[in-house]
Structures are given as C-alpha cells and as structure tokens.
Length: 438
Ligand SMILES: Cc1cc2nc3c(=O)[nH]c(=O)nc-3n(C[C@H](O)[C@H](O)[C@H](O)COP(=O)(O)OP(=O)(O)OC[C@H]3O[C@@H](n4cnc5c(N)ncnc54)[C@H](O)[C@@H]3O)c2cc1C
Image (cartoon, rainbow, N blue to C red; front, side, top):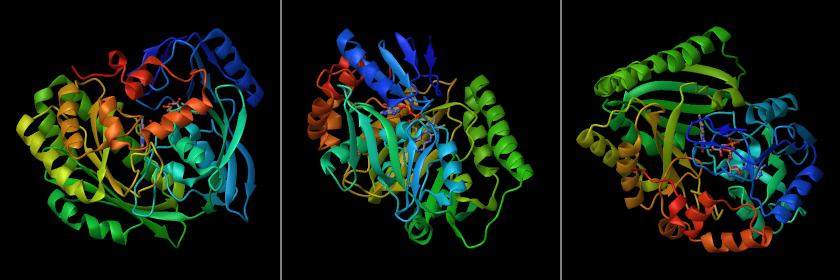
C-alpha cells in the first residue's frame, strides 16, 4: 500500500494500513506493535503537509469509527467518534440542532486529525478548534483506555489538545456545542493599506475577520462574518458560479498559466486579486465557514503575536517586492485567541496567523525560506501540519512547555511506539530526518 497525502508532499509504504471498527481492535494493534517493536501512527484525512503520519510500521485509519455517539442538549455537549470527517460532524450536529462556535477554512479533515495539529479558524473570541473540546477518550502506548476531561486532569488534557498523535490514539471527542445558528458573510476587495489600518476595528466589530492579500497587487479580499438573525440559503447556482467556476476553476487555469510561464505569475496574481468576486450570503453556519479548495497547493503558516501582525505583513510585502518570487496564490491573515495549551501556536496570548501558499506543481523552496526567516525573526510559531523547517532548538525557544509535554508523552507511551524518525528529528533534534529547503 502506498499512502499519498492531499498536498502531495508524502508518499510512503506502511507495513500495514489498518481500519479498526472497535476500540478493542486499536488496543490489540498497539500491543502487537509493542511486541514487534513497530511504530504506530494514526492518519485522519491526510490533510497535513508535514510527515506527521509517515511510518514504516502500522498506519491506523479511523475511517470506520465515524459518526455520533451521544448528545446532551442541556449541557451543550455532543460526543462523536474521533475519525468523523468535519463535514459529516457538522451536518450531524445541525440535524440535532447544534453548531460549533467556530471552524477553519475547509471541512475535509477528521475531528482528531484537525485538533491534533492545532487547526484554527479566525476571530477575536475564538481559540484553536481544540479549545471547543470538553473530553477526549484516548488509547495510550500500552493499549490502556483513558478518558480526560477539560475540568479534570488539566495538564494531561491540555497536552492532548495538540498532541501530534504522540500521546495515543484518540477514539472519541466530546465537543462543546451551541444551538445552531446562521451566519452572514460579506466578501469585498479593499486596498491592503486600508485593511491593515482598519484591522483592529474589523476585529472588534465582527465575529470573524480575515483577509487574503494577492502578492504584487495593492488589494486584499476581506471576509467579514457575523451572526444572522434571519435564516438563509445560498442557491446551488450561486455556489457553483462563485465557488466552483470562479474561485476554483478560473483560479486553476491561472495557476496552470503561472506554472507554464513563471514570469507571468506577478501579473496573474494581480489580475486574480482585482477580480475576486465580492459577494454577500447568508447560510447555515457550517456552510459559511467552509470553502471548497480544489486547486492543490503547498502551504506554510506561522503565528506571531497579534500586535505584530501588520508589521510582519508589511515585511513580507517588502520581501516579495525585492525578491520577485513566481507566486500566484494569495497570503491569508487570521486572528486566534490565546490559550494555555503547551503545543498550541496560540500558547500564551492572542496571535495573528499568516499563511503563504504555492501551487503544488511550482517550486516553493526559496519563497517559503525567505518568508520563514521573517516569521522566525518575530518568534513565530509554525503550524504543525503545514510546511516549515523550524529546528528543535527554535521550537524549544518558542514553545516554553515543550519539556513538560515530552514528559507526559513518556508516561503515555513508555515503549515509544508513536515516535518516528521525522518526529524524533523535529522534537529531539535528530536532524537527519527533518524537512529542509534546499
Ligand atoms: C486545503 C487545506 C485547508 C486547510 N485549512 C486549514 C485551516 O483553515 N486552518 C488550519 O489551522 N489548518 C488548515 N489546514 C491544515 C489541516 O487542518 C491540518 O493539517 C489537520 O491536522 C489535518 O487533519 P487530518 O484529519 O487530515 O489529519 P492528518 O493530517 O491525517 O493527521 C494530522 C495529525 O493528527 C494525528 N491524528 C489523526 N487522527 C488521530 C487520532 N485519532 N488520534 C491521535 N492522533 C491523530 C496524526 O497522527 C497527525 O499527527 C488545511 C489543510 C488543507 C490541505
């Protein structure tokens, strides 16, 4: 079996790809791996770019452990199998009368996979998605089952909230849910300078605020999202015209042109920026949050202290003007509320997350390397699932609770079955196996 991820950055053969249907089967796989001294990794939807799931041992998928387990409307809680894909989880919740308070940009990931890397959305009131979890059930590296609660063993719970699959196999998650609601999304083009100036006001005035800046252009696509008192539904025709034809179909052609003629990338990027569709729509919350992303790309994203976001963005702009990389994808700018989760990129205070992208068939190395130097100059923290070359030393500097996380890891996985050469390189400093931009 050869496993390939969404971003086409990984291609590997595990010794077995296993699809357990029950928790007991997972415990058995773990015990077998301990005996055979094999590594175990769990894959969600394979939507990370970094080799977190790569193993020559057992690769477990929870695709057969999907769906709802129970709901407690009074407490505002819903328990689901951890392998449930987000789009399925959101529509199941809606049918029961619930929504999540916040989501990310797409809904293809699995619940446990999204939580385990610190996946986030945007908005001043909202932390990374894992802050919406109230309980995890996890099977540790000796096959023992644990239930951890947000108000229980807090250091273990906090470590599990972003755990990179290193603390065990998460099998169930209980989510804090809200009564279901509708959102109004406004998308419009504005000059980048004006957006940066107004960013604090937008952040305070709107439930969710983010923008996409198209390199080489003066403009950004601003997305402002708020609760809607009235229900609404975007027509299928409109969704097809804007989401499929324009934002994916036309954008794909533009990227193919950039791949064919890299020198045309700046003018294509300018063209895309000026011609993004402004629109306003109301729909079920989960539909407004998620956008279809059909043009494959590579991505690097770092978080920086929120107050420094505009400064970092201006530096990135200057770097692009100076070095003229062939890039035809926009740069995304989002806000996340600070938390106390040891491996969260939002640990210790509010952060701005800035993401750079490159069409997957175009060289990205020099571009990402240049921008990564800017991120690191501001003590940025990389998104664990997205491309980066942060050294172990650097990660220890920006994640002050790294050591306590690794202590908990040892308790949960005394045989070390969840480690792989990539993860040892990343967190222990065995550099030979870490990604490097040539
Ligand atoms: C098109 C696209 C859009 C994206 N948009 C966003 C966004 O808006 N915001 C954002 O922050 N990120 C975003 N991401 C990144 C993505 O959310 C993360 O990389 C996420 O971790 C992927 O989830 P997954 O289910 O595919 O997990 P995988 O990539 O398969 O796995 C991720 C990690 O989770 C672990 N894991 C998976 N399941 C379990 C389990 N049951 N128990 C224990 N560990 C487990 C894996 O071992 C691995 O370490 C995007 C990625 C893509 C490709």
